[in-house]
Length: 193
Image (cartoon, rainbow, N blue to C red; front, top):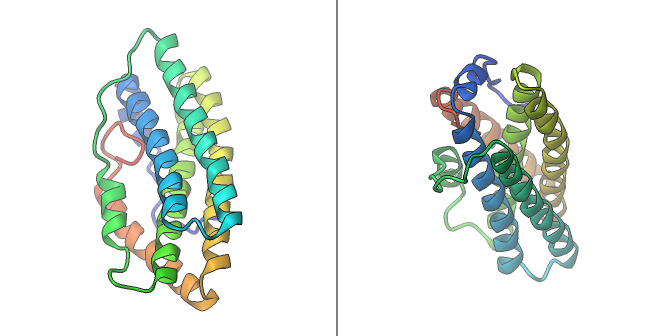
């Protein structure tokens, strides 16, 4: 569905299981950042009413996911740790075109968002299928479905607001680029790390 160029090695879950506090903290902030990202696109492109409505729905759902992850921390007698930078997302943002048209900038923002959702969905699938914790396995299976829906919204919005040929070309470029940068990830107990 996503056409990701590099699959997550299931052994990544072995790293995750050694520090559940870290993965849950990182995941919580990923959800908060996803909500902020949706709102920032709304603020920058308010003239697209149907996109505004769709992204406000995503922002609300991402905030509810933040609460769900926080509740998982509390249920395990853990507290939310400090926010961390996300090098994966920063590298994706480096690939956004500089100085393009307003339409091209919107398309790239939507495609970056789609890519993050696609990779998060893939990581949640790997977690749901491989983690030795029934509660977290079910939790990540449910969130995987939600992330797939978010990916679909972002990719469809890019296609709606961009030139079809440009969107397909850019998506393929993002897929290639993301596949290359993923070679340095998968070694930390973080969602994208």
